[in-house]
Length: 425
Image (tube, rainbow, N blue to C red; front, top):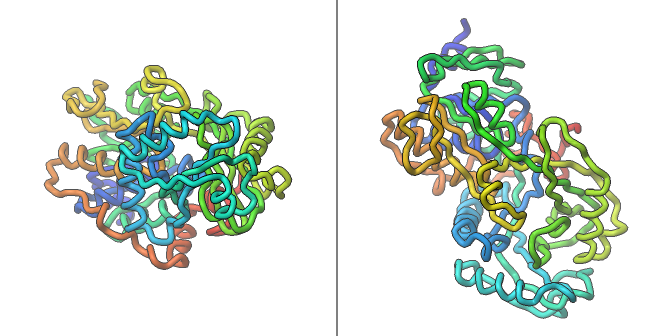
């Protein structure tokens, strides 16, 4: 047996899933001195993280529907600006009200933002058009908020690199083939693909997003997900500074995210059964472009560069209980042990197994910290998280971040124009 396999066999924690949350968990644990292996079935960022619209929420989108979630977004927005460097683009955000939009909704959002502590600056339509060339004549007023843009491929790869630099083993193209469960504990996990190893961890974390139910089933645990698909369309458009948000109840085609010479338009929300096999409908593309063009009319005729879909890892019980696209999607930490902690959802069965589901890219670090706190408590590790105050490696050097992306095969379509090397569909 190679020394690489021997080290893997002795892992304290196996994290399954190589998106922002999984790599964030691996980083958090490694920085606390925990021995970690991370397994991802593809390259990093292959799931929702690398197929998003890349918005770093200020919390304004959820301020009136979920104030607590909005505060989390605001706090994490500020943290990521401090620690993530060139994985975050400073842009600001502008919520715009068009003629015919509900004026009361605008006022409710403004008041809610102020209650949460989100800085807002309300401007009239003429001032908004002066700040954003090409903005629709129908814009009656707008408000500035501290939204920003994430470069997710860089963010995920930098988390993985920091985890690796602190002793973690990052296994890409290593799908979980099987789990052996004995007497209520996961005893071993077989990794296939390019790795072909068997890991015998003390603890397993399921951070596989929309696939969390399938991975949980390998351990004999039922975990119900309700994934939805959403389309993103990148078109040629130079010079847009802020993220543009339509100030209305969340709906199709209400976000425009600026890059350099392109903008990303999003998105739709359509329930699906299989996160690996779902329809990619033309109507979603056309509806998204049409709606985004109500904010920035030039988008209607802009050259389309690429189109991709992402799958949201929504948790079925929350969706069933709360419903509605306007609801902020919080995260859920599911402890599958019989003696489940009261602070997390209960699901009896496997003592050394947790799943983290839901959430948003903006709050990935908070999700990772909560998961690492639980794991450390169960393992008897007395060490606090330091990820909120520790800069990611290469944060100030885009070339270094892009090298991490190449190292971990972490290029997703969201930011392929900024990093290069778009992943094939």
